Structures are given as structure tokens and as C-alpha cells.
Length: 163
Picture 1: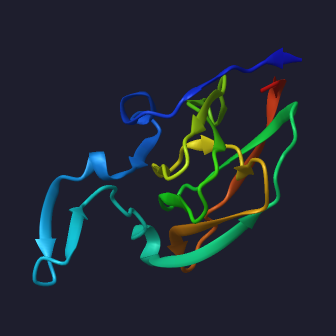
Picture 2: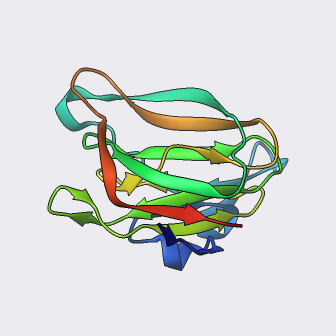
């Protein structure tokens, strides 16, 4: 078993895998609604149109994981991006990997601070939702429609996140 270290989530470190959803990443900031609302515009793309897909908005409720956390499998979505925005002020883990000949490579783990969301690029290997501390809800934007948009793969090596 190999130990997997976490690093704090940042837009630069996560860019090969997707986008960090936070106000600092807005392409434009403007006041709307007669100045009562600030719009942080175009923070992350939604890529779901492959094979006639359409966007879905869901809420995922994740049970918390206790340390140590074993990383034994990964999944990816070949037909669309997938975005997660926490609805509670709790940290959570993100584990991603580059593709190596159709299978996940060595994983990278990020610790998301409360309030940080992420959007995985299409086809990025990632571990399913890893809530921490308490049951946590996430607003999820991903792809609906025909076609198989889920691939799962066991890891060649089991990794463990200790804390």
C-alpha cells in the first residue's frame, strides 16, 4: 500500500484536471440587479454536449470518510464535465489521476477548503465524492442524456490517505 499525501486545492495545481470553482477564477466581475448582486462570471465551463447530452443539476449527499482512506478505484466521465459545489462549510478531498493507456495513473490528492468547488474536465480519472467530518451535500452539474458516461477502473496499486 502506498501513502498518498494531500496538498491544498489551488486553481493552478488543479488546472490539468479541471477548474476550481471560486470567485477568484471569474473571467469578469460585474454588478447586476440594480447593484444589489455581484456576478462572478464564467468561472468554469460546462462541457456536456457530446452525443446529444444536456446539463443536469443534482444534489449529491456524501457520507463522511474516516482516515485512513483507501483509494482502490477511480472513475471518469468520457462524455462530459462534472462540477461539485459544496453546500456546507466543510472541507472535502479530491483525488485525480492522469490517463495512462486507458487506466488511471498515479493519483494526486487535494484538500478543498470550505467554499471551494471543482469541475472535472471530461475524461479525467477521479475518485468518487470524498466528504469529511459530517454528511455533506454538494450541488452537482453534469451530463444527462443517452450514452454511457461512466467508466470505472481499479487502481493498479492501493493508495492510502492518512490525514
